Amino acid sequence: GSQEYDYDLLIIGCGVGGHGAALHAVECGLKVAIVEGHEVGGTCVNRGCVPSKALLAASNEVRKLRNDHHLKTLGIQLAGTSTFDRQAIADHATNLASNVKGNLQRSLESLGVTILRGQAKLTGPHSISYGLPGRVDVGGSATAKDIIIATGSVPFVPGGIEVDGKTVFTSDHALRMEWLPQWIAIIGSGYIGLEFSDVYTALGSEVTFVEAMPNIMPGFDREIAKLAQRLLIQSRPIDFHTNVIASKVTPGVPGVKPVKIELTDFTTKEVVDELEVDACLVATGRAPYTNGLNLGSVGVSTDRRGFVPVNDKMQVLDSSGKAVPHLYCIGDANGKYMLAHAASAHGIAAVETICERPRVVNHLAVPAACFTHPEVSFVGLTEDAAREKAEKEGWVDKLGVSKTYYKANSKSLAELESDGMAKMMYRKDTGEIIGVHMMGLHSADNIHEFSNAMNMGLTLRDLKFNVHAHPTVAEVNEELIRHAPLENVAAV
Ligand code: FAD
Image 1 (tube, rainbow, N blue to C red):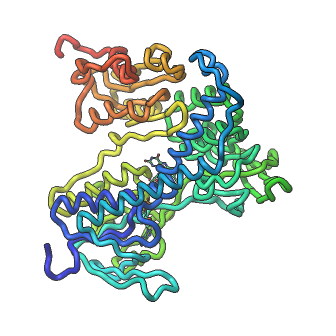
Image 2: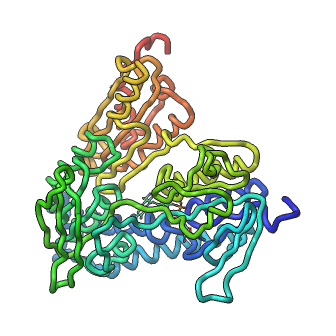
Image 3: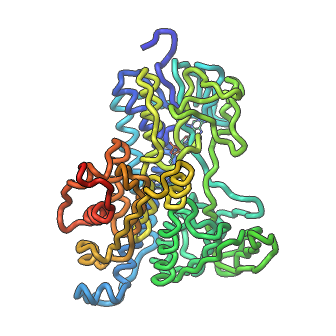
């Protein structure tokens, strides 16, 4: 450890990113402090991944118990009518979040990480001050050799949308499940909006999506997104308005006055419709939480959207594009890949770099998932992006696309969950995996065979002889690999 500073490493923000960095830094023998201005655990634990998965688990049980076909096929007869307790479901989510938060805090404390309370700002290259408005008992200043910014993000609300937190709200409010609207509009069909649609429809609400792009699920593979749209419309009270913007949203009063949503055509910019719904969830993405950090004191400014610019070792870049010594930014705040596990991977890379073993994060091998039923997951490029890359690099004749359907998977059939497909883009000559996309049972777990392979630089030639337990959904992977013929197989 260094003598001239209070700590070797100071981390601003105790979300998944900050927590992951702290654990790894302790393992590397560093003296660590972490400053948190709100709740230990950050978005993921308190207002994100964790409580949302609790709601999804509970609501999916309700969906199964209300699905006559499902019950009949499995030979189940329920005595009396099935019902659910909204408050109990909400409590499950809150209790889970507070358990996970407790575990996280204890793990940090038991490893000797100092947790400082307060909102922090930089006061120089090696120093911060922290405090809470109106709280003279909290706060102080601290110095460290290295500093990691891990301040995360907050819901982004576009102009024209008035959030009242009761009838028009973001995920922060929706996760508390204070009431169940009959009809809810969800603005934005990304993974957060889709996951909430899964919860709401299972519990009896109707959902109308408003999506600015021509396709739902922007960023996902187009074919998978189309299939998802078709499956959702078939099986749930969901409809989609695409290529339209919610240009104006006015809150209502539950049971008295509807929420009004003005819809504007994305292309012509003309007002095309007005919706009157009971509630509106704004799921239009997340904005970095970086104002107030006083980045100017170290010669750094955020980009137009507020993200802190970094290189692939998570070192913060100054206005001339040079890495600022000893300053890092990880997770949602750098905008590179706004998912929990990416934030921890960033944290580990930053700490490794601090320990003079520079490490980069290969985002093309980081999996992503949407926890609807069935789940959607992917790693690497979409088919469109793969084709574009192959054309640019002159190997489009070598681009292979392998596909398989969950209808051919025994485990999915046994569980009556055989909707979905998987596809893989790969190079026929080298066996390199370019991207894998799945929609089907447990696909968020199942993607890891491919993300691990990509991370380790394995090719289809290596994976060809992997054995998968039968019957499992992992056999979907085996099918994908089997349907991916390579050139020069004899050379294997
Ligand atoms: P955060 O978790 O946002 O943590 C940042 C922390 O920093 C906060 O606690 C904040 O209070 C603190 N902070 C900010 N500024 C300061 C300051 N100046 N001083 C001190 N402290 C400060 N991701 C997944 O991978 N899987 C999922 O299933 C998933 N589901 C999600 C569901 C929802 C509804 C939402 C909203 C998000 C979900 N995410 C999911 C995304 C995931 O939550 C984020 O990617 C992740 O939390 C980012 O971690 P982070 O450490 O960068 O930031």
